[in-house]
Length: 302
Image (tube, rainbow, N blue to C red):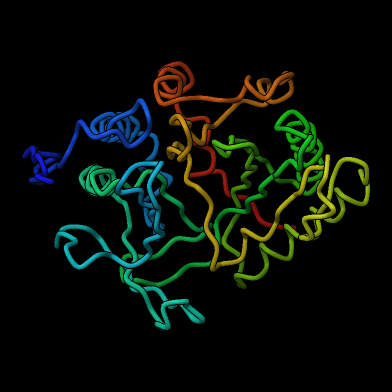
């Protein structure tokens, strides 16, 4: 099959984009994916900056196979920033991988052109010379077990916000873009990377102890029916969470979307918190970046 190519200049970088009219979702083309990422870049890039990105690629669209890409491919342009990160126990049998760091618009467009629909990042940053810092974010993944939905996850998020506030911490919600919610807490980097995981686990267990009918903090799937699993494990330095404003793969393009506490508290139906690319661009025009505090409001863990 011949590949139709389009040469473009993105902030002074020459990119060759391919197959822009190919459907990556049933009714959403690769050109539209790239256009969305280019337009959302001003608010998305600060949340990607200095973080080693795992790209999930669907070269044949969401109905085809996907693959996780941590290592920079051999054809990575020399202007794309990469960081060599230790990966002990890697399934590839390597001690380090060269991650792509999405610091600028050309890199984001380059990723989108490779059909990297989803971008996932860790809670820590990498310094200019490759030093891996301890986390500056704590994240909770609120995952409703059917028949519970995001409506119950919203209820749990409000309870968790109050637990965190007692410890002097502010939290900020976004949708996962699927069926759950993520709650982020900006923190001062602790001395030990494990500290955030320990704190998150304790907070989740406390919430489960206080609300046993609604919340579960243990990993076993059988415990999750009609409850909300507060997954604290994404604070493990080896794990990543879908980035704010990232697309998600599905029948239609949905976005991991920052929301307000008012929206969260008034959510009466799962459909209330489903947002597509155009919705999210309109929301940014209205609200700006609701997760901007994550970039600067860092507080010490108790």
